[in-house]
Length: 340
Image (cartoon, rainbow, N blue to C red; front, side):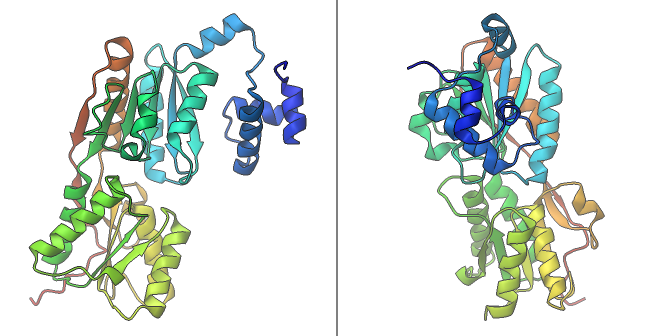
């Protein structure tokens, strides 16, 4: 069967040729539902862009793909910008591809390696521990940025991350130091060995060390968005019998969504409920009150990810796991409950 043309792909996907072209070139001005529809047709019919073969090879032979899991993560935005600027300084070309939180980042990597002949992949977000068998089949170096791949023992997979468990524990420790004993945790879906789970374990460890058993009713599951965090906190304020004086949010975006839910229920931050977030995005400094947070070194994460990937592209692939430190920013969003 002859390979389909771009016109045929546009016909099958019921979109214009220009839309197919923008999807192929990973342009940002394409509706995500349309993008996925076009990509599904491309995968189904095995379409390969009909460009000048020599030119296609030249363009794609130095491509490094950055696969970003999650469309609305402002912390990732800081890292993406730095990763791109560092790659541009070299002979390589950055190609950013966004996927949904529920999509499989390894499947996306296989597609991009096949279509664009990428020489390396940086994963931003995702969980390497759950996809070991598929990762083994990737024949180019990969770096998980912000996620630990320690323990996988795959020569092609490295990582640059923080100690999520210790960082989360430091946030909860600080809440206890400020006199809080009823602490809620706002986080994502718990999956074994990923960063969300490690932050949850750090929260539990802090509770144990302070002689307090964590109340499972105070774990609020949410996506990493303003809206979902708002809904989760609004629901607990209205309907949960277990009251809390503080929230540890696993991202600053969640913390801001939680704060609005508190205000909209006639309460205040920090007088009624204190909040500490995670990541250290710029918005925390301009929020009122300024948000306490655990700041990740986004610039250093980006720089080390690029350096590590290029090192493995240009020499033998050796697995490494680089762990960077975090900083506790105290802000003004935590009320001290200790008697003066």
